[in-house]
Amino acid sequence: MNAKIAIARAPANVALVKYFGKRDVELNLPAAGSLSLTLAPLETMTEVQTDPSLLADEIFMDGEIADPSFSKRVSGFLDLVREMAGARIHARVRTENNFPTAAGLASSASGFAALAVAGAKAYGLSLDEPRLCVLARRGSGSAARSIPGGIVVWEKGERRDGLDSTARSIAGPKDWDLRLVAGVTDPGPKRIGSTEAMEHTRKTSPYYTGWIESTRVDLGEAIAAVNDRDLEKLGEITERSTLSMHGAALAARPAILFWNGVTVEALHLVRELRAKGHQTWFICDAGPQPKILCSPSDELSTVDALSQLPGITDIIRCKITSGTRLISE
Ligand code: PMV
Image 1 (cartoon, protein in one colour):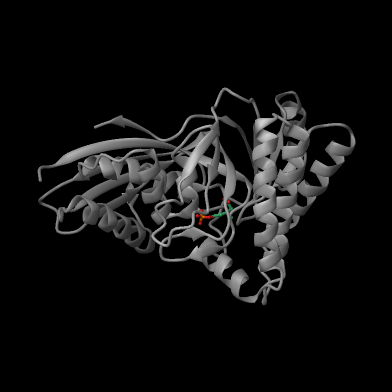
Image 2: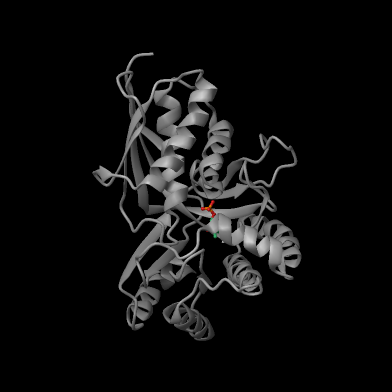
């Protein structure tokens, strides 16, 4: 196999109906389906260059040699690609995020979506969208949702090999204009990785079963709300999914607390804005960053209110966008 190069750009995604629990840890199969928005401008750009002269994979993050644990994860993922392609040749990977890495801003989702698309191409694999979702999912579950664009559903799937646990778009990027305002309170890496947090919650939280059951109901209702373009309904499901996920994690023993004080203040703020008639709903992932789903007409007032909260250091205004794409090969 000769040297080949491919570059992909992948957007982040933020779930409205959360994924938090695995039915298979090795394959990253979720215990329930989830629903997300594919978002600009948060994105990862990744270049994969196969090179017969390399004795091992070389991984660069933002122009510097990546730390060993990240490199190991990327190399392990490339092993899957090599296995599918029947190749042994190593690769040089350069990856860049335009936002803080591993801080609960979905960097693993965009990161593994970009790596799946660029890696498959560089190793000569021709995979359709469902297969790319399955591959991206192996790197990080939520990465499956960054392959398609718009509003995306990632299916739990029934098969043990996970081939039916893929993601699909249920509305295109231009079909419904929704906004997401992401606040940064602490750009450092998360204190606990999401897989560890999910497994600890599954094993020790008395609320885990209820959380998974409620997610199944929430997903069905959220899909209906998207089909009806019913923002009030979708917002209500969104906030309750976030709060239930964090509730299950808080009930784990010992408790997992992703939030800091600013996160809690942001939740109060969102509820106050809503009481004043604004269409705003609180979202939070496996980190302290508060995110707010809102209507386009409420975006500026939301940004304004959030920016006045002490402890908010940055605000990123996001819009729905298209999925991961190859930009050169
Ligand atoms: O990025 P992953 O696959 O480790 O999963 C993270 C899941 C949450 O961000 C906590 C919720 C979600 O559905 O994105």
